[in-house]
Picture 1 (tube, rainbow, N blue to C red):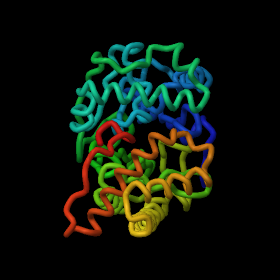
Picture 2 (cartoon, one colour; picture 1 turned 180 degrees about the vertical axis):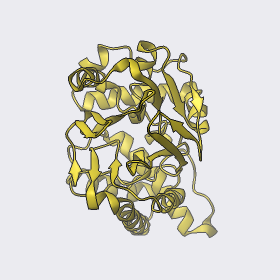
Picture 3 (cartoon, helix red, strand yellow; picture 1 turned 90 degrees about the vertical axis):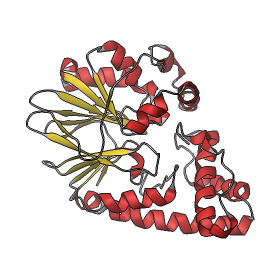
Length: 315
């Protein structure tokens, strides 16, 4: 079952934000952790929801970045400035990305672009959410365990959606936080987004398929429970296979990356006109994906030209 409404997910676990972009708070005996960091315009919603849900903000001592795309770390600067003792955690590659002035500028620009698309400019302007050079944190990677007291999170490296993607797994509740390393549960469909390297994206799905899952907590469009959660990664694997075949066919049909991408953009927004991403950003994502799969399908032609990183901070 898919749930888009914010509030309690399970004992000690909360979904906050908005349906198109959310974060999770997992409470332990020793402290709480915020998992993922959504869009920057979520700040007023999250502050209100923390109060309404009775979540003690002072116990949130960790914030886990699952990857360094603009729509998954928007609230980090605000909460780090609001809670100076907050420990921000991310992969080694994520911290490399966030050390780049160019990437920071892209994150801020895309945050403003999507806030405008969603009619949330006022929410963005009311808080100091801009990324600057004052956010520091700790590196986590494959096999690390975050002990919150009474519950723990295991870290898995899941590259492919981005070069810096990680997932978190809570074995006690069989709860998986894959971010966009798994399919995105939009409506009654799944959206595949192997932005950085589609082949590695598919390998990461295979890796996560070995985990028993009772709850899958996505960053976009809510969380999934029950039988659908148990089969969600397998469904994501099949959707990724179909998407790869479609991209290869679109490339052959159009004779160019650009032509294939324009066909994909048209089909996507015809079916999902309310999707939160601006067309310019999605065009960059699709360009990168088609470049990869077309080059992999035609290795004799060599690598296609680079330069399609507009849809992500890490390319």
